[in-house]
Image (cartoon, rainbow, N blue to C red; front, side, top):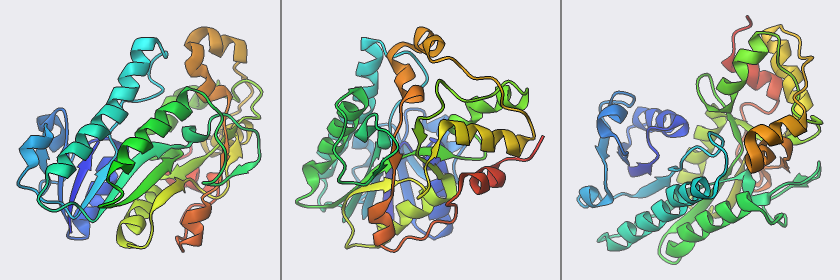
Length: 298
């Protein structure tokens, strides 16, 4: 299968590309810095910096993973526009390119996030849950709507992704230093729910959706057992054999991060109902097992 990937040099893109190459697929991708990306990807991958450079590559499948990091900076109005452009505008450009291809791809797997649902309590949220109206929902909704413009010609799966637990990079990398120093702990009340997924399951679930042609629409790419921030903090501290006594006050986070602190202080318990119904079997269902797989105790 010929597969084209945006966001190919990101955390998920790199792991996915490596697995696809192992499975003998032909992979090409979009990157803002092809020279740098080439050093991080298998040699067999072809890279372009603009969609027009890939007019001769007629993909059977497109996987859209591009997007600026959402938790790296305060959400000023300018930053919000950057987040929207890196997801919505890029997806619209991708859709335009797909429309210009001689033959449309059989499937488009397009990124989204559990932020689609906005803040919720501890109730399990399936793909049919009503969202809470806020910036993360607007961002994900517009991102998804852009991808769905091709659903009359191409099968579309929307990947509502949780926090990705990986050996290197991702949200976990930012937590490790304070926890290894024994300075980690819950954020705010610690009751906010965290919907997570191991990188291995993220990659395998994408490939599962790629290979099962009857599947389409939104899918929650999260492990079946979301946990509270306090439980996650405890599991991480246990794995690192460190205490987790230091609680970050909510008011301090709001002063430091502004509206972006909502990502850390609110949450949702997202359940992968449609993925499980489709027959996917998770390798990592419990957060303690996932953390043990990616971390060595200090």
